[in-house]
Length: 320
Image (cartoon, rainbow, N blue to C red; front, side, top):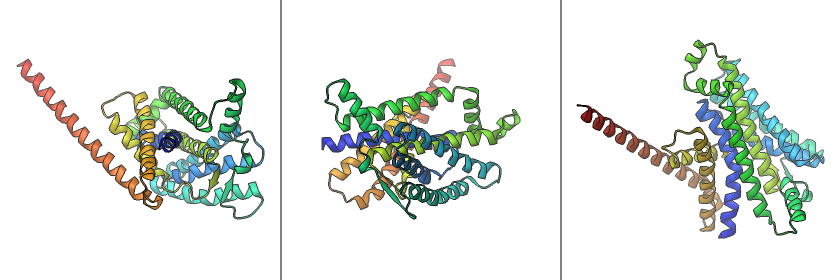
């Protein structure tokens, strides 16, 4: 049981980066972007391909992030310049990435139609193995793969949260948030909303691809179908996080709540698997978790509004 929970924690930290990326499009920009399911696979495919070509795994992660940014840029251009609706623009990019990901993995092996890449013969070619080797050499051993994976996940999430918190405090970041809140008002103030949308979508999908890069190196393979259902996982993490941190108005705590939501979700999945539920039922279990989180969030919002009205009435009575 303990090993299953630790595995759930590790994967939760990896999927949290994807959830943060989904948050940037769905919540910050109010853009229903479905590029996610192809973009996480893009990050994994690029990373696996580069490791096959003997590229440093740290550099591979950075290049995967840039590849995700390009995918988000394409979605943004399809929507802003070609006036394609948000959902359709994301779908078009997503289905295009399916073929692109196969071509990327085929380039690594030199075989046409390669749909998956295994990194088992590159055991020393991932960031986890390199960091573990370094730590064990510095501290005379004792660092397990799980401990290193959790450590890398925590540091990565903190760095991403810190970077996002800083970025959205800048003029450009504030313009992106304003675009999501009131696009017409932003245009009236002279803000190029097309540009802010493209930047946000590029950053969103860059983080999603970054999550795929970590996931590929953690699980040891890349598969063209590994992104199926990832958008639901991202939304579930956001909803759970918002339910837990429903009363906070801090942007930093909101981002941290999404990470907590992703961890809670993966722990629930781990417990369900441990209980004996067939893996074929994980999709319906995911749907149930999302429904529960939505109901809980709505209930908390109603309680918050009710308590707010009561406090307002109390203040009016005291003033009289």
